[in-house]
Length: 230
Ligand code: DX5
Ligand code: ZN
Image 1 (cartoon, protein in one colour):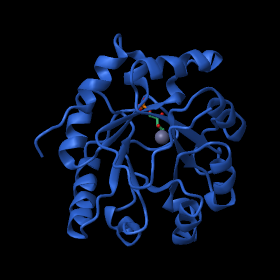
Image 2 (cartoon, rainbow, N blue to C red):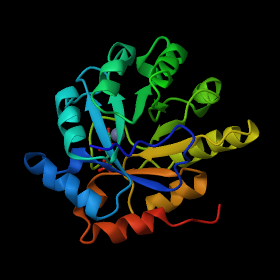
Image 3 (tube, rainbow, N blue to C red):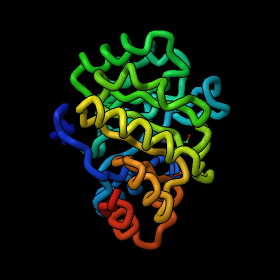
């Protein structure tokens, strides 16, 4: 199967990444088809190890199975300790974008570089209590920063409004450095909070429960994608 892999230099402009955590896991292939038919840009794959976060989700075998049935961009969010130990395996299993938490890794820069060396996109993520400034030193090396807008671990939580300021601080720094790094937000993103996040400078929106519960998924995604005046 031809892989529609996002190239390293392709910009991710106001894209929607659907979190499969909210999908019907017993009918995953038809859920993936639904995402494709509704023009969803990426599939967000949440990996939880029960240690870094207080929940266990799924891992490499499921990613491999999804890779076999779709050419959608697979946006993998690792919520695991010592992500460098697994990075290569997630790339081999089909990740197109690999995101890990800086709180979980002792050698962040080396991990970023090892992901980039495989040819896919690398991203770092921060939990709500981690300050915006902690990602500054990595900005020249990553394709994307994921600002968690809920405490990682579960879908269906409410957006934490204070996280918008964090997005704004990181977007300003990206602009100051003359970079075009993407900012992704994840957690409690819906028709209203997506506006807040975009105004603050986010351009990749993860959505789980809102998207999967929407009566018209394509319409919900289009609404979230709309450009806003910053
Ligand atoms: C939470 C996950 C999210 C979650 C989003 O730890 O990283 O991706 O599935 O789900 P909603 O959109 O329902 O908050
Ligand atoms: Zn996620």
